[in-house]
Length: 246
Image 1 (cartoon, helix red, strand yellow):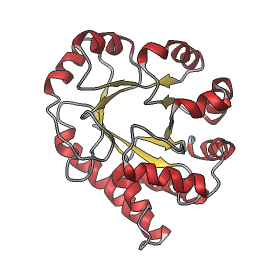
Image 2 (cartoon, rainbow, N blue to C red; image 1 turned 30 degrees about the horizontal axis):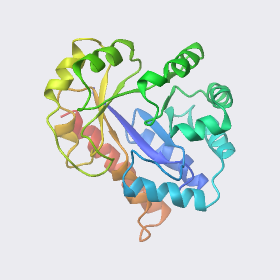
Image 3 (tube, rainbow, N blue to C red; image 1 turned 90 degrees about the vertical axis):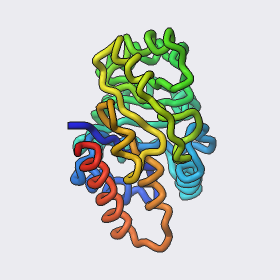
Image 4 (cartoon, one colour; image 1 turned 45 degrees about the vertical axis):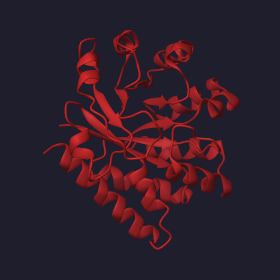
């Protein structure tokens, strides 16, 4: 069974909605949830997630709310925090580690923290039974892929193409997947550009997919009520889970 990881922006459109969305996605078959930490300059994300980040911040999102929500969500579904290094550094990694451990989180995803600079944080997280997820991209050299793969835990986030999330590009990943498999048994999940139309192809040769923009786009739809948004993201997640396991 291939896994599905879903991303939502914490606090958007509301704090209560985030909790409801976590339950909905879990019931739809999502295996792990990325709680996006709102940030003003999410460099790896496309305009959809960037806009949701800005709206959450405009609504008054505070880091302490992330901690409170996580304590309610993590017992329901495997949960990771996805955010940018400045957010964690500014508040203090020790604070985040303590709160993550208290909440029962399984790990962190920090796309702008290079592997070469992540060693101290990797060690700290592993000491606290959590994982800092490693990224591999099509632009990485075979040597770098080997280095990252050998130490990866939980899953490897394989970036589907060079660029930002949600742009819908397509590149063959066969060679890079084979290269990763030479060095590790750690599951490989493909992210970037995953939606109902692309999920089946993106899942070929890997162990799961990560979907973000396709869900957040629904949350941004002002024509839908919150109840309708929950129904729609649940259906999208269910459809994707079915397609990647056909």
